[in-house]
Amino acid sequence: MAGPRISVSETSRPVLPRHAKLKYDETRKVWVILAPERVLAPDEIAVEVLQLCNGERSVGDISDQLAAKYAAPRDAILTDVIVMLQDLADKGFLTEAREKTS
Amino acid sequence: MSDVLGNPTIPPDASDSLAVLEKQRSTAETFGIPLAVLLEITHRCPLQCPYCSNPVELDRSSKELTTEEWKKVLSELAEIGVLQVHFSGGEPTARKDLVELVKHASDVGLYTNLITSAVLLTRERLSGLADAGLCHVQISFQGVEEGLADRVAGYKNGHRKKLEVAKWTRELDLPLTVNAVMHRQNLHQLPDIIQMSVDLDADRLEVANVQYYGWALKNRAALMPTVAQLDECTRIVEEARERLKGTLAIDYVVPDYYALRPKKCMGGWGRQFFNISPAGKVLPCHAAESITGLDFESVRSNHSIAWIWQNSDAFNRYRGTGWMKEPCKSCEFREIDFGGCRCQAFALTGDAANTDPACALSPLHETIFKQAEREAEGGTNRFLYRNFAGGTLESENGA
Image (cartoon, rainbow over all chains, first blue to last red; front, side, top):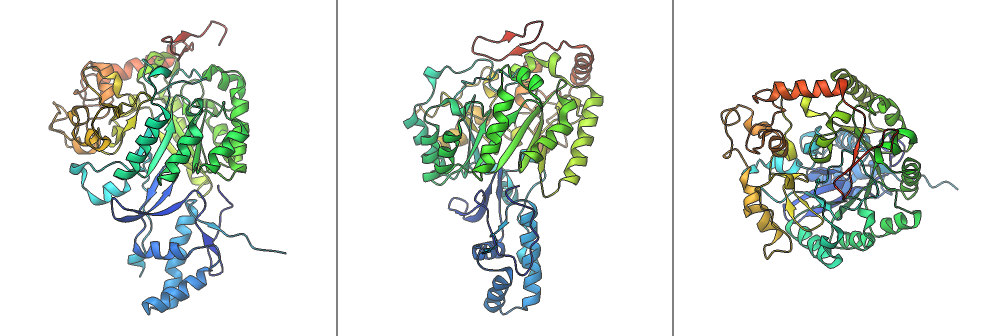
């Protein structure tokens, strides 16, 4: 794997690995994730979550932002975000920023 | 919200893995430009694998597209909506301009895969490819130990080199796919090949049983597995998939001679795939040139690649279902497997419009199956090695 198997939690700081590229496909007018031998078609919300995954924001921060934006219950959003990201992580298309330890 | 959040789609079937978007839109009839294109940039290769997927009539280097021609092709592909390119061959690293081509592909926004035997790579060159934007490396392995692996490849010390390059690949943080072509003479090594892939820190393993066209058809008696071997292979793959979930993804291709239903070859002729040959021919499948009577257009012609895909006779000849004869024509599976593989139908029946004999409904199926079984039990192990001279028979005492 591109990294150890990760378990997504509220404190994870996920980021797409170098080999998974989120890109807007101008021809088909959809967002895609390009990965080895794969083209994934994330839906709008998944795209929004992934755009927030920069290796610095935690899953908790991301859920806060979405809860505010959509005026939706944070707990429900957090659960959904974790499920979506874990699925992506299990398939090898999500990694975690390394903890900065001194 | 969970409705909207949904999961990204990953189809289970390797042959359809790049068709997610087409499938979702169900616009098969419009034949949108494929998401990924295979670029066979050269037929030159230091290896001589007896099941090589290149045509028996190989393109000489003097016919190969130039650097500038390939760059123009890459720009055009990006412009018409292709998202990924696979640099393949022959051995793509045999071209001196590979780094330049990968750089150009990255510059025009293409996701780049390298499909390589690895034996010509140095660490410096691989690092150069990574810097040029290469996204993924696939290395072929012929076995799990050098005795057998080097004999299959007809290349000394190849296996050791591959292991080294696989290690560099991961050190450079490039994702690695191990491609293992399986046949009667190496299927017993499958459990070790799976373990080797894990040890090499690969993300994916392709367990690809030989498909019998071209070189492989000439070597069928030396390669065809027994039914028992194949059943065991399937069991091993299924067990490993479960055990290694989240660690190693395994794509699995079975030899279709032993199937009852033919494979949906290339996802259907001219539906979601094309490749470009070293000389610039735009082909519906890498074996398509084995079908005589089809005229394939070149990127050197005055037609655009998009025009060739949409309008050329070769692409339209076996597209959809209109060309079919019985038993395909009235078959309930005709839109599911599109009658199997046209190259195999041509190679085994002499007419590419016939039902692929891999299908149990083909009048030739029984004969072919029996022949495969006979060859698997009593065939010679001697290889006919692939080369530009039309093949060289392995000596009695090996290689």
